[in-house]
Image (cartoon, rainbow, N blue to C red):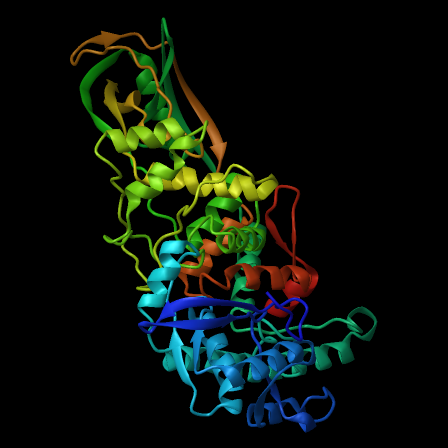
Length: 521
């Protein structure tokens, strides 16, 4: 190990077998994007031109001052090298960062040979496999990121990794609104983004739906039948009526002869499905719902766990395990844990992992899964790692099995239904406490038998407005409508929070602020 020009990016030198020969490898790192997009100097100052001019202004790529030491390290080290191997993350952003490194190195050595290592986890096997199967960098994937960055610069927000001087709409909107509201918005950046604004729009749309909601009275008939193990509630097959008179007439007919006749008893197997393999969007949603960890923190922790070699690459759209992935070995690693080790061993003893398959594959990375066992984590790192392990084991297990009984009764030609459930095998639920499934005891009813209900009553209620959006709700809407990517959902949500377009209620639901409402309306 030796020092580079940047104290944060060390240099490691070692001998290794590559290209069929013994070679000396010089390994170093960058800290995210090495280069930034911005307008050429005359257009960078906010008051230097009409924002309209930014749509056609010339753009350049440059190295920001705080990354010049990393660039100098690359320029120095590449002089002694015959080839360059890119080991950045295998996604769009990583491919683009790789081409930034190539650009810097080829400026020093134009005829440099360049290779790309492809991997989804930081384990010995994955690293060796990547070394043995080097490919070429993907120019088209990198170009797609350049296009997005230019569009962000010309139209929308500042780029994800650098604060730029651009963003035509952001500049126009900020200057105009500061002029109209100088006291309130004097120092406020009022950004616009093609993903940020729809995200804000979902929050505002839900808030307005709640504001506009007019509750409506409804009426229903409820039947109960007490027995030695408790009370059975029979729900009206009509569910509810919005006409009081109509419901009252039917209720009075029931009360004239309130004897129930059992018209049907159906008992059938019932399954509760084990979870699908974990992709990024599901990880963000489930961590928000089950662990109360927000999407940004979830992804920050997941990146750390990946870098330490404990989990696979956490940015993936895939929920199907590839056939070549040795799941049994991954399950076996978890057998030593005192909490879920016994369950992991049972999976192996009962024929091995049998994962449920989804329908999505990005052809780049497998679903998120543990790659190494550890018991030395603390706080939210430990909670998220445990969740990923338990989810993986649950996915590789069997569906929970039960027997569901449905009883239908008739009172004065009105039908009512009650359901009971007996859980026969908890299976995946034994390792996955984040899902609930409970027995619901119901007595044995015979078809054709009659009984006197304990109560027959007419109850009223009011329709309820929708709830404000949780973070999980918001991510689901973004995914449904194609807003952002699995890698940027958390970032867009964080932006509308930090810009104070939205706030959070005590129960962590999104509430638009005055500025957020004003911008959307």
